[in-house]
Structures are given as C-alpha cells and as structure tokens.
Amino acid sequence: MRPLTIIVNLKHYEKSSGARAGDFLKLFRNLSVPDGCEVNFALNPIDIRIAADFPQLTFISQHVDPVSYGAHTGHISMESLKGLGIKGSIINHSERRLNPDTIRDTVLRAKEIDFQITVCCESPEEVRQFSSLEPYSIAYEPPELIGGNVSVTTSRPEIIKETAEICHSKSVKLLVGAGIKNRSDVSKSIELGADGVLLASGVVLSNNPLDTLNSLIVNL
Ligand code: G3P
Image (cartoon, rainbow, N blue to C red; front, side, top):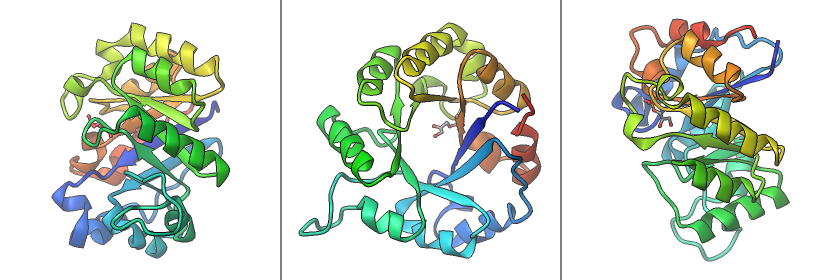
C-alpha cells in the first residue's frame, strides 16, 4: 500500500468541538488504520486536552504560535502541545490566515523541536513560497471550494499535479483539500501525485462519520 495521510479537521462545528468533542471522537473508538496509512484529527486548541481520553487516535492542532516558554500571554506553544501528546499542527488555514513571517518562524521553530507543521496554501504560488521552508507537509486548498460539493480533485487536477511536483522536489509531503467527500476523491488525489487529503465536512457532517472515514482509507 502506498503511504496515505488523512487529516480530519474538526474545525469549530458544533458536533465536533467544545462540550461535544468527546462524544464525537467516541465514534472513532473502533477506527482501524492499516499500516502505511496515517489518520490525524485536527482539534481546536481549546479542546486539545481531550486527546488524552483517546490514546488510540492521533491528534494535531488547528493552530500553533512560534513561541517558547516565557511572557507570551494567550499564545499556544509547541512545547505545551507536545507535552499533551500532540505531534503537530496545521497553520495558515484559509479560516486562520497568518503573515509570511509568522509562517516562517513557526516552521523553523517546529524543526528545532521536531513538531510536524502542515502549512495550508491557497495557490501554487503559495505552495512554491512555503515549500521552500521545507515544512513537514503542505496542504493545498482552494478557498472557494472549502465546504462545498465540488472537490479540488475534480476542479483543479492540473494544480494538484503541479503542486505535487513543487513539494516533492523539496521532499515535502503534499496534501490536498476542499470538497473531498468520497473514496474516488482520495484515489484521484493520490493518482495526481498528492500524499493524502485534508478534509472536514465530508466526515464531520456525514450521517455516519466512522463509516465515511473508513471508506476513505483506500488501498493504493
Ligand atoms: O481543513 C479542511 C478544509 O478546509 C476543507 O473543508 O469541508 O471542504 O472538507 P471541507
């Protein structure tokens, strides 16, 4: 099986965050992830401590700041996240954009402490710009397709190919996201050169999130 990475972003949906995050995650208690496949749940930082209740699942954060210990009121540090068993974070999501200096500082700091950063990018230009920092991975997501029913794989196949080439020339993994809903979106992403997908509504808002997620774990 070709390695496949899936990030399920729990965003700030009512059913998957805050007081309901635990019940939502219980749905995945029997999730079985085959060798060579990685499934990470991206938690809202305010819900991060819930990760301890689900040792069989893997978690990342939806955001992190490039700060260490010290006088940093209200920031989220990689040290704190790591201490709670969180192995990485998304940054610069379309719904939580950062300036380029902050992205650079975050990626560089993460490398120092072995924390896995996935930098979200809205265009091939951004993929080029931020893959040069060599983060753990890049996630290409056209913002206009996020949360919709037209997937990035059907709408932007050429850009997936192009961004995969850019990332792989730097040995950076490429994930793609926006509108990913089913197994054929995942297989198509991989066929086009991506290493996995970043998705949210397709799993979180489905009637049976566990079955939906299982159906996305394709054998390639
Ligand atoms: O972070 C994933 C995301 O932005 C894509 O959302 O709902 O289109 O899968 P969705």
